[in-house]
Structures are given as C-alpha cells and as structure tokens.
Image (cartoon, rainbow, N blue to C red; front, top):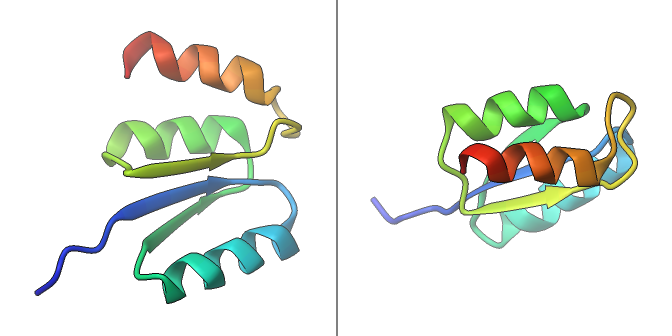
Amino acid sequence: MRFRPKALIIEDERAIRRLVRVALENAGYRMFEAEAGETGLRMAAERRMDVILLDLGLPDMSGMAWLRTFREWS
C-alpha cells in the first residue's frame, strides 16, 4: 500500500472545498474537510496533517486567529 499524504481544507464555501478536494484527491491526497475554524482545529489535533489549506475568512474566527491557536500546540 502506497503512502497517501493527508490534507485538511478549512473553508466555509462548499464549492471551493469541493474543487480543492477533487484536485488534491486526483493528486493522491487523502482529504479531510472542515467548514469552520473550531472544527478544523479539532481535526488538526486528532490527525497529523501533511498539508493544511486555510481560508482567512471563516465564520467563527479569522484565519490569523486560527493560525495563532494552532501554533500554540503544534
């Protein structure tokens, strides 16, 4: 079984998540999705992601606040 890197997209717009998911799945990534910052933080904590794509304008927090929180423990 070959290695498939894990990618997390944190984006509130469904169409953008779908576009990115399809493109990265075709490139061999195993995809995870979150539509809000808190959910994305939880998913990032539960799984060790190889790539995180982050929308800076999330409904529950700014992308910059997400990054500060993520950097506190990652």
